[in-house]
Image 1 (cartoon, rainbow, N blue to C red):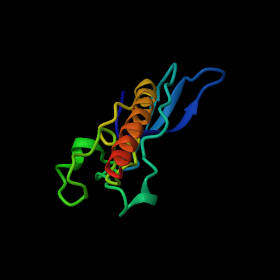
Image 2 (image 1 turned 180 degrees about the vertical axis):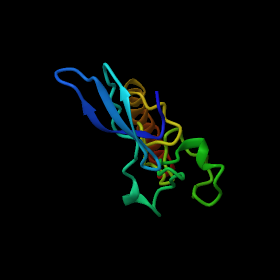
Image 3 (image 1 turned 30 degrees about the horizontal axis):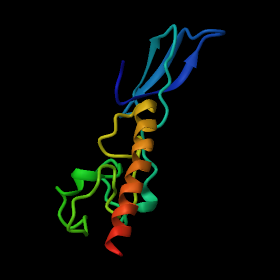
Length: 130
């Protein structure tokens, strides 16, 4: 396994025989390879919420207890619920969340958890307005 490296070419037919990889500086290296595992993604697409939702240095959205560490981003007196973003009532699940496990099963579980937390948020909001 190589980190900070990207595959720029694959060679062989019908199976891989080698790959050309480039490091961060652009230096290319040919490596023997009999197979490849392709990992897609990695860069969160959160630029559209910059300035509205709290993000970390990598652009991942900060949620729940991690918001308390950044004073000024949580506007309410109550603590944020797990998975709750810096916008009260907006919940974040999956790989775009700071601290996520980055596995499909985890994202599915977080999605189910987020729905339950939305119900908790709505019930609290309804009770405050009675």
